[in-house]
Length: 389
Image (cartoon, rainbow, N blue to C red; front, side, top):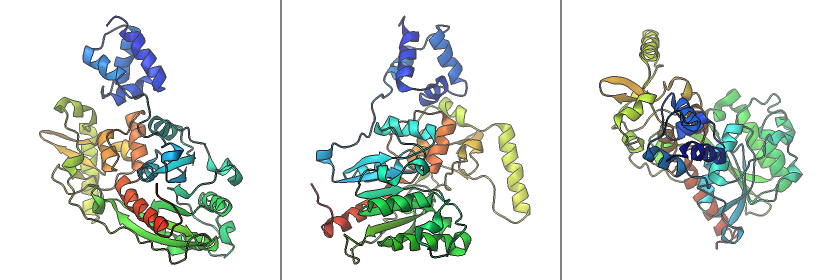
């Protein structure tokens, strides 16, 4: 294929990818960006299979917004990340009318999958500029509330990112909301932070429900616990709205179910070095001598579930390493991280491996959110607050 260099350049330009991002996306390994550069410069030539794979890389979003006539409700997606919460609600007929996410790499992944360009910093967006919507979604960061407990309504939360959620709820009065945060939010500052959040939401005349749910109880092989806060607008919903959090099905899980079935050489990129492995072993031994349980963790395909994946996974992968025969353990691949969070394989990963690890570590376990979304919609439909189509 004589014009392979031009075809690859044009494809990469349309995708908006760097050479490193394209190399990681198609699994070329640690020096894959150099390979892409040589191909584009005509210094070497990709195989027919490689060029076919590159040209077949998806350019259209995998999960576009449903058309208005096919949607059941509207929603906004705040602190959207890569859209894990949206993905869950969209499955049930949700149409997103506004998105906010400040990180440029997360914006890139979001646009590749949903076709929407997220707005940036939510603190700079006026609440009256946000469109009307039925459900507000937000996986917001936890920040200390310096004035917690002063009983001044949502003014107590100024200077925190939760304030931006509160002011939009106050202005737009959605029928319902779902907020997601780390499990530790409930005990933060001796419980005062969570109490302030709850009191602020209730002061806005919403019925508020909260629960900690674990991903491993919803068929995802990860010991990930998160707190979910659900609210319903009392001015249009009966305060006795029939909402209950989903009962975890406790489906049996297995780590091997999310592992890629690829040739052994493919995983060399993700195998940790001797230096890193020896460092892990030394630190684990030091922790054990001190009597605590910190250190790296190795799992096999038959393990029931992994530890919680975090945004720092890109650094050394210490929380989740996969055992390999006659080799050092390896990190999960980005696709395996996606599966560990319950993302479908159609989800496009248009960023470098390091960014992908951060993004999935910061995201949500999609099946857990799906179960909550189903219960919220059932409650709204039963109360005749929302009509099915």
